[in-house]
Amino acid sequence: MNKNNNVLFINDGLNRILEENVVSFHMPGHKNGKIYNKLKYTNILENLYKTDTTEIPGTDNLHSPEDIIKNSILKAQRVFNSGKTYYLINGSTCGIEAAIMAVCSPKDKLILSRDSHQSAVNGCILGDITPIYIKSQIDKYTNIQRGNLLEDVKSSISENKDARAILLTYPTYYGITFELEEMIKYAHDNGLIVIIDEAHGAHLGLSEKLPRTALECGADIVIQSTHKTLPAFTQSSMMHISEEAIETQRVDNDRIEKMLKMTETSSPSYILMQSLEIAVDIYEKYGKELMEELIDNINKFKLRIEKISEDIHRECTNKLENKNLEFFNIYNEDDLTKVFISSLEVGLTGYEFEEILRKEHNIQVELSNYSGALMITTIGNEKEDFEKLEKALVEIYKKSLLEERKKIEPVDYPYEIIPQMSLTPREAFYSRKKKNVKIEDAIGMICGENIVPYPPGVCMIAAGEIIPKEIMNYLKYCKQKGMEITGVKDSNFEYIQVIDSI
Ligand SMILES: Cc1ncc(COP(=O)(O)O)c(C=O)c1O
Image 1 (cartoon, rainbow, N blue to C red):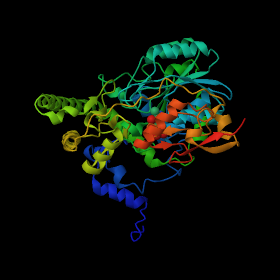
Image 2: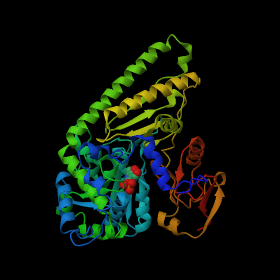
Image 3: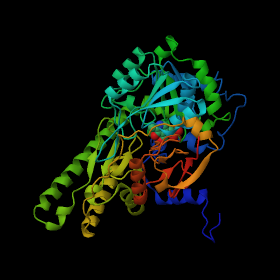
Image 4: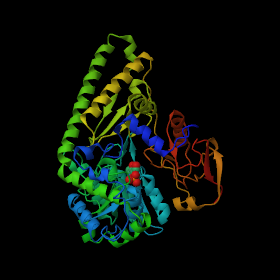
């Protein structure tokens, strides 16, 4: 720690956050550990140092579990109704990469949604697999990812009869679901193995009011970030294989296990494994009741916001200065635990809205895009969290009025455009013929790196693809407005790596 010259270290940053007592509408799902205290799972918190162990007599081994880890996993398997479950200690990232490499061999084709997480593209790089992208839908006004259309999935499968597997993201980061069951049936009828990235849906089985789980829809391999939406520590995830996929030998468990040994650490954290076990226990014993409470809190919050909007609308007719603004709009469909609040009506981009919430109201959202901000709520959130959010929204609106802000028009997300692939992700990744060019000059060249707005961590242009003007213009504009772009060497996004020549 070096307080004199203001260099802050990790410890300082984390202590600051502790002091701020931030209201969490972001992951991890345990929401600053509040749920552990509430349900009296305090052992994990009190004995953190002592239970940080490695493989010694009595602690079993994640990569060949025979004792306590096996029992814990068997319980998870029963609770999540899977044929075989794996605890993942390097997040869903390692599970997605392992699943892709387990079902596909080098040069195989994998059909995947364009909104796939970067780990899916990385899985293709590692396994030398050729991605075939399916267009994913984005809402024009909110820029919310809406997943895939059945007709797009069907035509991609029909046009790629030689593909080995299909990978879809269900639900999307924003909680939107789609006709997954029909897609899976069509994929199976055409001999494909179905991998579902359910990173944002580990909690779906907790209520009839939520969409069906990917396993219920018939998926073969499902990867869930337990840490995102259930009370588990960051990085703790699970992979489930369906009973049917095992019985029909559509999925080879032995290959999955070999790939997990490659993508996962050989020293898995017992604290993370313990937190997975606790998440399963909470899910089974208290999950349904807490989920009912959460949905009730969200519904009441929405009703209060609706009432405020109506009152403001009524005032509008009398007061001239209000006519430039409306109140925030709430989007909450399919997975009701995801609450997107659009801020354009209040004269703020989502990036500005996120910053104001954090700096002036101690509220941390999960992510912002140009149009608004996404709240991830979980069974770890309390009624008071929603009350604080409501209060903040009213104050921000009043401030916007004083500042005489005006409604902002949405930006057009060029989701229709899937860049043409010139080199496979692996060929592009390993190419030594890369050079930096100014982004204005990069249009039409072969991209040398993955361009990934973060969050949501989806590649807008992958390495090996021809750089389209429309996507570049969108990225440039949003970057100026506050979007964070990862995957690129120049984080200022003035230069980009392209492939010099083939
Ligand atoms: C859709 C999706 N899949 C996979 C991942 C990776 O999950 P993890 O952080 O558990 O590795 C993320 C992370 O944000 C994601 O949004």
